[in-house]
Image (cartoon, rainbow, N blue to C red; front, side):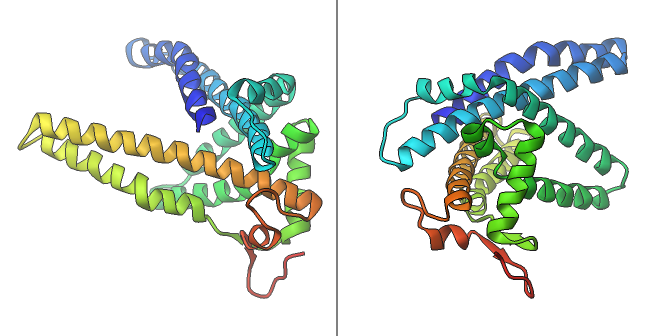
Length: 257
């Protein structure tokens, strides 16, 4: 969890620089186009940081699953070797995120959220193995996307339904209670007890952050294990082949390869 925690800290530090002027331009000067540019730069920096530390986590996970140690500096050494690929992939990730938000904005109410969610799921499936491909194969963004999609289809078939087990468990046990505590804290702060409400909201916020970091870590570990299974047809570490094959189930009437 050191990798996503460090990534979040670095992302926060470097994205503040363009975000604050962007907010001032939007709120004070009402200069929309300049604010949008600064917000886009901030989104790219956040994406770059996330991918950078994701590659480091992927490299560290690979060594850990093979019984070797891999401290933060060793994982980030791999990330530094992949900076050109990371920079290009971060641009793709940022562009796709902006497109999905634009699609959501074209629909009103729940329709936009549904369309955006479907687009996000489709993108997540296609790009799920992209970071391991960048880490271990040094592929550029287009090749990484093609390779990720090809490996996924080759091993699990074209018509699939993902089982978001790890994220779902973390969400139910940690993130959801955190959100509830935040909402309760806000309600308390506005009524019966300001101090108690703030304390409750802070605890809830910490739970949401911890849950998000844990889900991100588990997702990347699973992605790395699935990559090796897709390439070699064998399990790695504590993940056996049957377990990894069952992570993704074919839809009824479709058979995974």
